[in-house]
Image 1 (cartoon, rainbow over the protein chains, first blue to last red):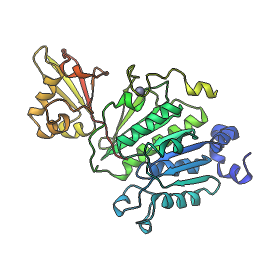
Image 2 (image 1 turned 180 degrees about the horizontal axis):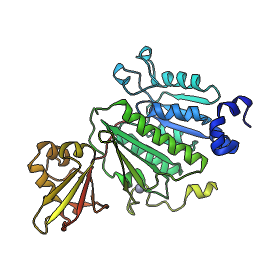
Image 3 (image 1 turned 120 degrees about the vertical axis):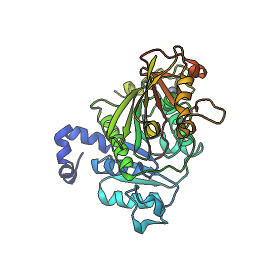
Image 4 (image 1 turned 90 degrees about the vertical axis):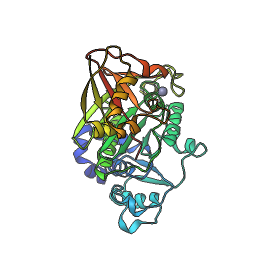
Length: 250
Length: 92
Ligand SMILES: [Zn+2]
């Protein structure tokens, strides 16, 4: 049941998808892997939309060089744990939702416990080895993975529904080289908000997701393009998957 | 024959969005990208690894269809083809 406060807070979006839709958001558990450039806008907009439980994972502390894009971390937060910095702001933005701060490094040991009880995994990481690990677990547990990545004015975003769409390994079998990437905050905002929009649509079961579609944003020319991707029949992660986890839920 | 090169992200910064190459009939993908490298060290560094093969993370498509696997370099291009090159980004 939604409280009077909640009915008021979410009035303008209940006009869009009804109280039933708002209940779906409220009962959802979403894990956001990374409280950096992508994680901050994703978490902010899922929080204001009323997604009931957000688990924010990051092991890092706030550095002054993060502040050009990681909008939940402010000048006063340098040196503070990113999870704590983000958690405080998110809770202040929306006291009606649960924010879980998980200050841990995502690795093979920690990751399964961090994602398995959730409805959606948001990839807000800055490296492919961790992304592949999240993708592996998304495929294993049948949880959708919302991928985003950025560099400079460029970004890419797609939605992975294990068993139904290409997974991250199908799309990117080989990781690009590691680098200290240049980036402007607006790119993180644009890509992060597309990810958040996808999560919200998925939870509501409305609209059309970025399934087998890799969206490519070119901020220098303001062009949004789309590449069609498909499942790799020999993919090490997802070629064994037959069932459709979304069908099971329905 | 004329082949169009559609570049994304960093490749677009280096060589521009759309390029046309006038190549010999039967030129493979590798030949087309070597042709672009000849004019730009930045492009060569971004597209090829140290051994001179197309970097494994670079996504290639001919006429919108993904080409992958070991033999992708040797796939032959035809007049009017569009070769798309996309370097995935990694930051977050
Ligand atoms: Zn796959």
